[in-house]
Length: 225
Image (cartoon, rainbow, N blue to C red; front, side, top):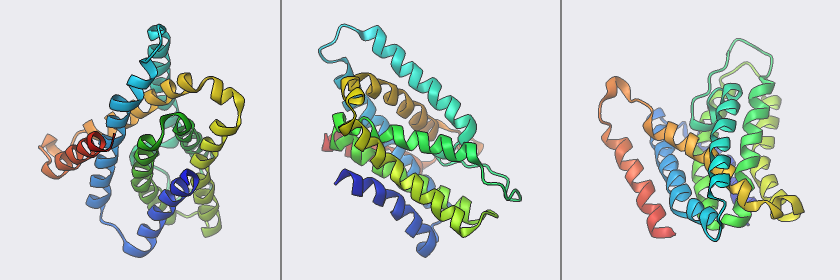
């Protein structure tokens, strides 16, 4: 069922854009909620699991830092798509291959630890992918790319996280190094979620709606673990 849920999370984002025309504020609040949920899952669930029954604390700490570095590199190509900020040249008819590859690598990696981490991480990724899909779909539709190219990209993007789950379940290497892979992905999640949550608001004013969305994401994680 995790395959269907992950694929549907992207489909939901596409449907929202095509039929509901979401407001920018809605997307931002949903993004803040998903960021806090993902960060809470990483801190309350994944980190304790990584450091349980191991003396290799330094190794896993390095892997977490490595995940942060990897995500920083990916974002230099994806234009910030993972945290809701996509910047592409709308007048350029050439499809951004580097953006395509980097965001697909990211989506694939998100699916890898689900096999070991369980439903808490699954729902965190699902909640995270919906606003990302909204932003991505809106950007691509408003570009000069053909509808066929946009559809193909969104389809491949929707399949990448389920493919990551499949690889973790079926490929022995991913099973043997599941905890190490999870540590790297925790670094990725920490990078993405902190950027979403702590980016400056307009004029650095306190944003009550965003703060409420963040608190709700944290509370939902606490009560569902």
